Length: 243
Image (cartoon, rainbow, N blue to C red; front, side):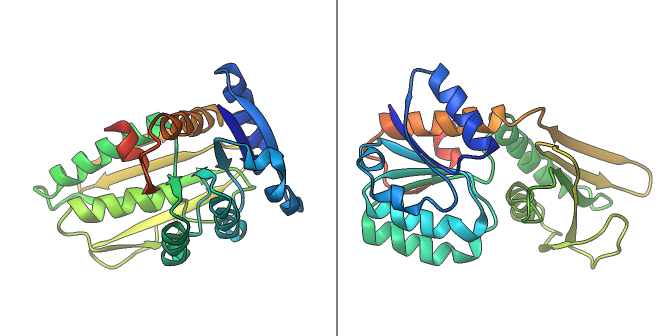
């Protein structure tokens, strides 16, 4: 499979390493200030582009790649306020965007457990949910896309909960609102903690990534899945791959 990388930082290099191990060819890399490469023969020859950049760049990257007829796998978060625009781009180009707030297989298992726990906790009103996410200092958006996905899953499965808000550790929030705190420190790849606290105890669910390799592997697997399923079109997420 021929892969173009949009974003050639630490994640891009991790994807390159893992994709090469799995027998794929990186035919083009595009980093900040290299937008002219979207018009290059190497990019247009790619089977799929894998995009990990910044929230401010993601939508334009989708527009350029999908406009060239290239399928995109993207793990960039923080852009979803522009989701209607992205859906319009997909519809107008007839393209395919495989997007996930987190491509780690472990995180997606964690999300399934989170959904079940939220449903179970609906029967025990004394338990109140809260969340914390910890990432490296280079991650600018907060809460993380994964944290937002986890919170929305709780809201869908836990009847007393109706929304979420950013809050510092220990802040008081309105009933029915999940407080999400964040921390940016060092080179932490990603930690997500969901806690359910009652007057007498706390139940804690946690996923802790050891490196970027889990995210990179999931993105490459998603690209392989797209390449093997050419009939799949539109906006696709990890749930389809896992199912």
